[in-house]
Length: 440
Image (cartoon, rainbow, N blue to C red; front, top):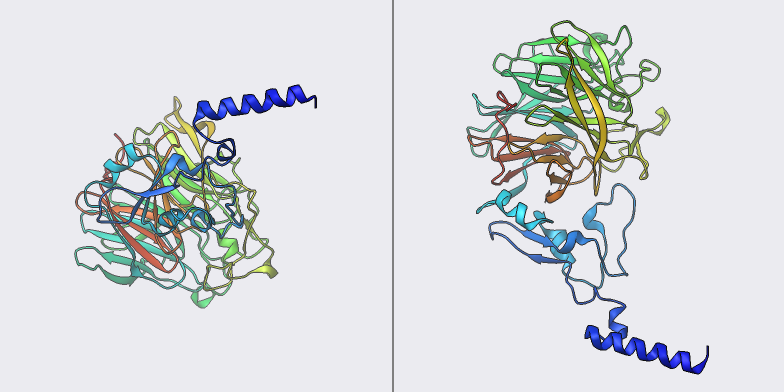
C-alpha cells in the first residue's frame, strides 16, 4: 500500500472516531456496555425486560442447538444481566403491549399442583361448576384423568373416568357446555382390560354426568394415527389434528395406521370427514380467531416418530416413548383463512407462516379474549404470547414442560399451565373468551 494512501485511511478512521465519540477499537464491540436485560414491571413477580428482543448478543455467547435446550440455556459469560432472563417468571419483549397484560399484580406459582411425570393435556374449564378437567397421556394402561375443583384453595384434585370409558384423550375444548375430546384410543395391544380395543377418534362428554359418546373414529375404514387436538369453527364444523403420538405410545401398534398426518374437518350434522390440510409435518395444536375468520395450526415437526426398537424416555417421560428430535424440522404456527361455501361448509385457505417457536415446539394453542395467541412450549417450560401478526410480546416461564393451558376463574384471568410433572398457576390481566360464547 502506498504510504500516502495509508496516511489517508488512518486520518479517515480518526475523523470517524471523533465524529462518533468512540475510539475505533470500542466501535468493534458496541454491545459491551449495553445490558441485555433489566428488571421491570410490578414487583409482585420476577419480571425481566429484554433489550431489542435480544437480537444482538456479545460475540462470546453460546447455545447448544439440541431441542431439549431452551432459550434460557444460552450462555453469555460477558453479560451478567442474562441471569435475570434465566430466573424470570415473565420475560418481556414489547414493554408497551406487555405491561397491560401483566396488570398491577401479576403472579406465578410454578408447580402449584404437583403431578406424576406424564403428559397432562387438554385442560378444559367448565365455568358453571368452576372445575378444570385435565387428561393424563400415559403411561399405557392408564385410564384416569383429573378434575381440579377450583372452588377450593388450593384446588382439590380427583381422578375420574367417563361412562363409557374414553381412553387417552389428548386435546379438546368446551363447546355448548360439553367437552369435546380428540382421543388416541388403544387398538387391543393389552393396555385395556379384557383385551378390549378402542379406535382413535373424537368424542363428546357431559362435564356434569361424565356420560360420553363417540362422534367419529374412522376415515372411510382407515384408522387415524391419533387425533391430537381439536376446535369447533364458527359454523359448527369440528377441526382436529391427527399425528403420530398414539403410535409413539404404542397405543396404535406399527402397521395399523397408514394415513398421512393431517388436519381433518368433521361435519356433525352429516358425519362427513374431509382432509382440511395435509401440508404440515406434524399438526398439533389448533385454534380459531374470535371472529372465526382465521385458523391457527401448530406444526411440531421437530418431533419425529422413531422405530419401535428405539423407544426411550426422551429425557422427559416416565415411560418409553417413540419420539426423537430433528432440530431443523418445523416448529411453526401457520395461519389459514376460513371460508364458508354456499352449502355452509367451512374450508381452510391461504396458508401462511405466522410464528417459529424460540424453544421447544408449539403445542397447545389458546386465543385470549383480545385475540392474542398463547402458545405452550411443548418440550419447553414456557408459554409465548403473540398478537395476531405473530409479533412476540412476552413469555411466561415455569419449571416444567408446558403442553397446554386454560383460562379459568370468574373473570377468566387465571391461567393453568399443564405439562409433565406439574401444573402452574398464573394470574395476569389477560382474560380468556367465554368458552360457551367463543365467537364475536
